[in-house]
Amino acid sequence: MGRPLTVGVVATVLLLFALRWHAACAQTCLLTFPGESKQYTKCNDLPKLGATLSWTYTPHDGSVDIAFRATPAATNGWVGWGINPTKTGMVGTQALIAFRLTNGSTIVNTYDVQSYSNVTLSNLSFTVTNKSATFESDGAITIFATLILPSNKTNVNQVWQVGSAVTNMIPDAHAMSNNNQQSLGTVNLEQGTSTGTSSLPHQTLKNRHGVLNVVSWGIMMPIGAMIARYAKTFESADPAWFYLHAFCQSSGYIIGVSGWATGLKLGSYSKGTEEKSHRRIGIALFALGTLQVFALLARPKKDHKLRVYWNVYHHSVGYSVIVLSIINIFKGYDILDPEKKWKHAYIGVIASLGGIALILEVVTWIIFFQRRSKNRSKAVGSV
Image (cartoon, rainbow, N blue to C red; front, side, top):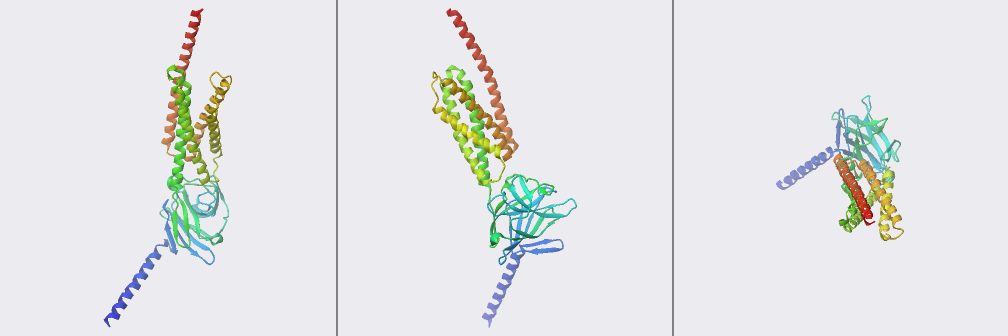
């Protein structure tokens, strides 16, 4: 009798523990609001921006009830969550975005994110019903909606975001901090797993793109040109100045091509962005730089009759590359929007090089006139 009783007690305890565990798990997906609560079967804390996503997936009709919660970047800001049906990233996302109106009510609309600068109020590529949003006392906004998944696809690319302002029902651009840029990933609505796709490799690629191009096109190329322009004035520097010039320009070109290649890779990550002028100048720089390399292979000797024309070509293309490089680097700063100290540092470097060039230019002309005067004196003395 004692043995069956013991087994019964153990079974009862295990059953109660299992029920308690199930209830505890279920409670993690219980959202509570003043006067009501909503239960979901799945929920995840998203890795960036302090956001959460809760949902219930219904397989037979491919519908999913979602609740997305985040805090806007400012009092009059917005929160958004969406699915990108075709690829990872923000461009192409079909988004639900919520914000408070001036009368204090909270509204949620659907938007088509066609590009970083083109977000339009629009129906989505999949059906959305039961849209609503609540504003909470701590400043957070929760978006509720029912989605009918395209082709009952359960593993989808998700994007979430917060912003600081809304203009004419269109959300203003969000910040470009690492947290903002890393707020994307995938979610398996059936299995209940959600991952944040870290943009660290993407961000690292951006940083490398910037550093490589600033060092090569923006610093080494101008220094190489300065060596050719001013060092050869001093007879003792010949032919060392030429090798230094060739080293700076060839190294700058090789590093610059690496920077150009990272730009192409970034472009493949950001289809739909409108950085046409930056891209076109970058392509022009690559073409001109490549022409300079091939021009060195065809450089006539000093006493050749074509040397003067080659010099005009070489100098014109070289200075054009430098001017275009500096312009494009500042365009790149505006696009990447890094900390101001990096832009200020480059301004300091360019200003310093410009100051040195100005001093050397004066010195070069002084030496030129001194030599011409000396040569004239010798010519007169020989007569």
